[in-house]
Length: 195
Ligand code: ATP
Ligand code: MG
Image 1 (spheres, rainbow, N blue to C red):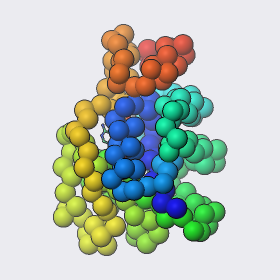
Image 2 (image 1 turned 30 degrees about the vertical axis):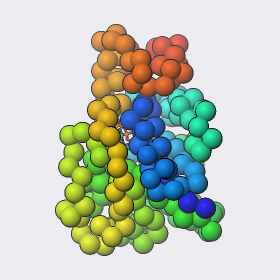
Image 3 (image 1 turned 135 degrees about the horizontal axis):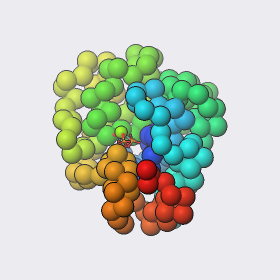
């Protein structure tokens, strides 16, 4: 069983995440993609705006309708700061026969050397890296031990970010099609990112 793990803050989840997850699934022949919101991401200076529960609900709404996508609540269920190495150790012990790939955009590929315990991480899992506007996707910039574990797959440049969606919401600008419709409705009903 080949499983892609699409981790993120998902504050909110958007179409860029879903396209990346689907491209990785198809290009790498993954059986499933598990979409996993972080509780508190270690690398972000500001706490997420939406609660873990709200981000979880938006992930569930976004995953609906794709039989290969499965929302996973290990990190938000556990609470605290979500270190990938701890999640990876849990996953590999819980599913010893599965092969896991972390799916990451170019910004995270660049940032890989700074991941907490990256040397342990690359011993246990591999990465699928995808293009993202504004970031260089060049594995040659990485040390060999990391580079050998990163597989690049084709991805259209999708210029969508959660930051931009929060900014649009704050200005009361529409976000239709930047997020799945059910996510847009959830944000509206819950007045998310309005201030
Ligand atoms: P924020 O602006 O709040 O940081 P974000 O849009 O970057 O939000 P994250 O939840 O931080 O979303 O990202 C989760 C993962 O999805 C990361 O690996 C990131 O590189 C990837 N990703 C997000 N948006 C895109 C995109 N438009 N194209 C490719 N990868 C993306
Ligand atoms: Mg980000």
